[in-house]
Image (cartoon, rainbow, N blue to C red; front, side):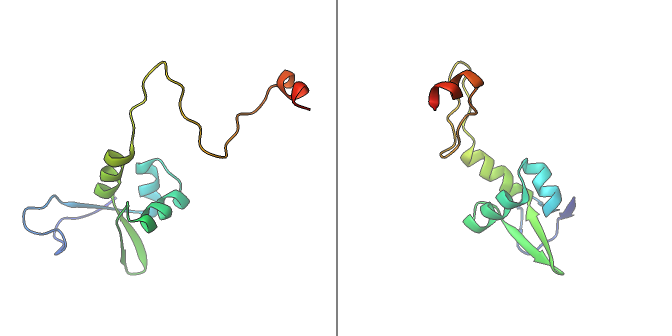
Length: 97
């Protein structure tokens, strides 16, 4: 992980900027690179370019998680993603035909 504590973009008294490569940021955020770039394009994650390399602001991943994560409550079924289907067992498939 690359750390840049003296960036002019940080401002006086700002928290140190934590920068990471795309691979490191994917591991940190528990997402693939496609989802990472989606979030960058949406503006949910901040990225910088230096010498042709993309560096991801890990603080922006933390901020995105603070905004988007919803706590799971035991006993409630997790919502399915739109367009996703649960695999059917053999007995269920026999009745569907």
